[in-house]
Length: 156
Image (cartoon, rainbow, N blue to C red; front, side, top):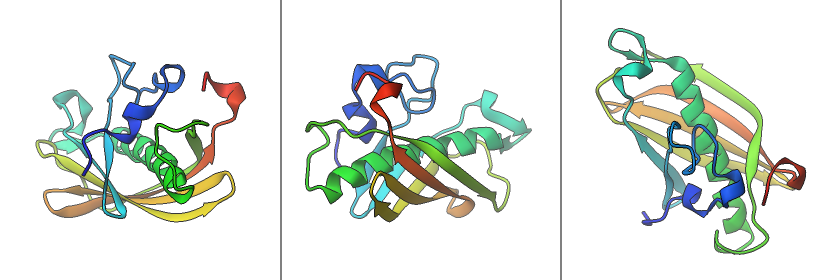
């Protein structure tokens, strides 16, 4: 994996997202990287991310899938164009659709690993399939349909 995360390439104008923005002190500030053809994000929930004692809140899991998915979409789009993520014009993605399937309760107290796989890149759309793994078991599966962010949404 590389040292610099996908989200580290976001310009200041779009780096305030609650889930993935490095410029949001109250946010999750997730970091995603390539591991071969798979994107990986690791995150350890804090005690206040609890749904029921001992288990992670489902909304947090959906947020992790959402932001890991849009970050993966941007990185995949750059790869498909044969460009570095630092190159212009900047490519950023927002969520067009988010599907989350909770397969089993996700335990607290362990690091979560999210693994993303690019399913499709077509025009301004990238589809990413993601699994959340806790203690060696897939607990959640998700799919993000990410669309290229219109310039009218931010300072990119």
